[in-house]
Length: 222
Picture (tube, one colour):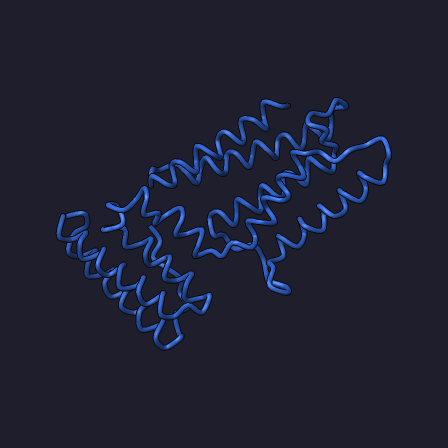
């Protein structure tokens, strides 16, 4: 039981390192970590002996926060928004409130520090804009300064997240960096001339979309 949670946390942190270094497999490892928490929640619902003071409801709160962080981490759609929050966040937040209320109402039970800590991380993570997450993981100057010179797809992604947050000027600057990185990529034979021409058309259309406010097809997928 403990091993499942320790393995999940370990795999997740390794995936973060892989993502920061742009190594393949980061998304897969994040999915594996989430699956391990899911397995833990199932077993925790069956066995009588609990670990880390996590009751049945707490195990599922842990899993759903992990799922929410997973979706936010990979920029996946998490349902329609209400009052500025997506539906997945609202569901897991309400579930967390119920967990706290039910647990503290029983004088013989205590809140799990693991569940509470994960909930705090999830709530905090929800207030971090996607463009900040994108910049930290995909364009971090401390780690990726040299790689950023050819990282046109991440600059385009960053431009998209800035655009949808209304940061028009910063989105245009990021778009120009994407174009510069694309041109650098063809100079060093990182991509061929055909791909360069194709992506250049796309990036220019994104630039025009930022100016006109008509960019709707999201960013370049890599």
